[in-house]
Length: 67
Image (cartoon, rainbow, N blue to C red; front, side):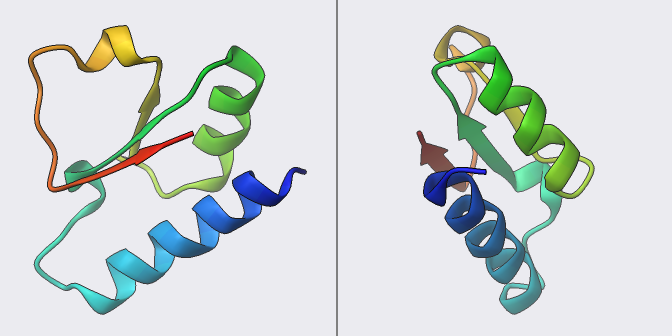
C-alpha cells in the first residue's frame, strides 16, 4: 500500500472523528486510476465517494482530497 493511500485513510478517518458535523457523505477523494479507487473504497468508511474527476463535475463537498 502506498504512502498516499495510508495517509489518506488515516487523515480522512481523523477528519470524521474530530468533526462531528461532517459525515462520510461530506468527503470525496479524487483519484487518477482504478486500482487506487478500488483500494480506497475498501479502506474508507461507507459513504466517502472515491472516483475520477469526471464523476465530480458539478458537485460540491466540504472536504475534497486530490490524489
